[in-house]
Amino acid sequence: MTNTTESPLDTSVQFVKGVGPRRSETLAEVGVETVRDLLYYFPRRHLDRTTITPIHDLEKDTTATVVAKVEAAGVRKARKRKYFQLIVSDNTGMLNCIWFNGIQYVQKAFSVGDQVAFHGKVEFYNGYQLVHPEYDRLGEEEHEPLNTGAVIPLYPSGQKLKSVGLDSRGFRRIMREAFKQFGSDSDDFLPDGLRKSQNFLPLDESIEFIHFAADLVQLSEARRRLKFDEHFFLQLLMALRKMGITEAKGRSLSKTGPYIKLIYDALDFELTGAQKRVLKEIREDMASPHVMNRLLQGDVGSGKTIVSILAVAIAVGNGVQSAIMAPTEILAHQHYNVFRKYLDRAKITTAILVGNQPAKERRKILEGVKNGNIQVVVGTHALIQEDVEFSDLGLAIVDEQHRFGVVQRGTLAQKGMNPDMLVMTATPIPRTLAITYHGDLDLSVIDEMPKNRIPVMTRVVTEDKVPKVYQFIRDQVEKGN
Image (tube, rainbow, N blue to C red; front, top):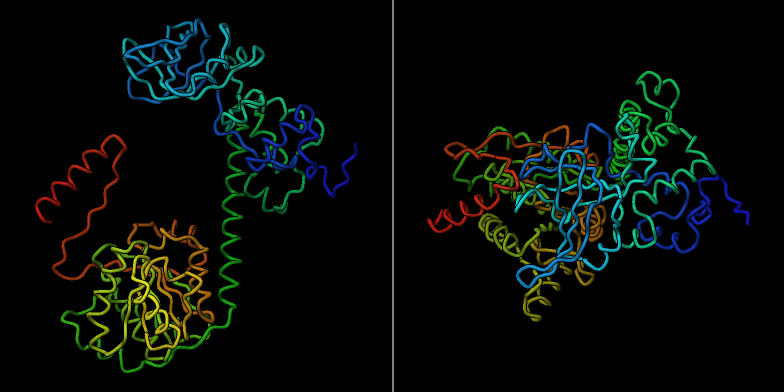
């Protein structure tokens, strides 16, 4: 049967030798529907002699990859609990591999004499063992070359894929067939001059080598090219998204209005230089005819909230409403209380909308938001429900924006006619990473703490120290801190 498509790589994956209808249905569940999808189903990691640990060199609480031969297998019982045990060996020692779950499936996966690559955390209980390790069976044609520097790809393969023979060994077989039948992706989007100036491999070679590299040098070069491609397309997506936002016609909220002065004069502290700088950036954005789409980053206690309150005062002074969306009801109530403290002084009407409000109270708030009597509303995801209608939403603020996706931000923005968008985060993000991940947003950073404020300390904690962190938090809560 002939498949007539524009590119051979757009052929259904079922026509790859060794796939067929049954396997193609299972592959479709992981997003592999065409030959191109299959070629871009990259290995999760690679196996080579530099990544293999001899059994006698294993150390407790480390993560290791072992290639060993199955010596014995069977279901055991201890303390009224069954488990499946493999005893495996290499030429340096013996090792136990243990499974407590999925026994019926996993006991069918191994036979005595199999050569298998195991990967997992090393534990010690009557000898070294791996509990629920990842595993990949190796063919005889693959085991020996490992000792001479060959590189073997190991693919993401859950139980359903393995049930149709698509473990890593199965994937390697159909990948080879795909390259034989259809070749690689020769439609390289990078201009030759750019590719050569950066010493990048051609795209077709990169895809071939990520699956079947002759050595670590080829693998490294393939990874380098494909990593660049991923970052390039991410940046392209962000640039296109930002272009769409920038070109969208917004409203110029250029009036200062009376409210910002009322709030500013009531402050019992002086804004820091950083707060004044970011407030100036926000005011300039709001005054422009284009839609503001800005990320405001600052540590806890740096003063993001008062900046956002002053931005709300500008919006209300220009006759439009504001919405502030927080990820939890607790945080929404905290914001509501702080916003009211300042907005009440300027006689700006403020309400809160969360999920567990009484029906009568909710209807009253929805009516006030719709007719414009409520000028500012603070809430959770409840703000983006279908029954929430604004009279004229001009400013949308999203706090802890990493807790919301682009879709939620977009849904909130659709409640108005291209409202200005200000998203806030206290998560420390290096500037270069912020520009990469939030390329569709302009960036403002409050990098100065108010006077007499205890400095915020940020620490990276490894997983094994997490219980100590929880205990520290409990102790601080008990002390009332």
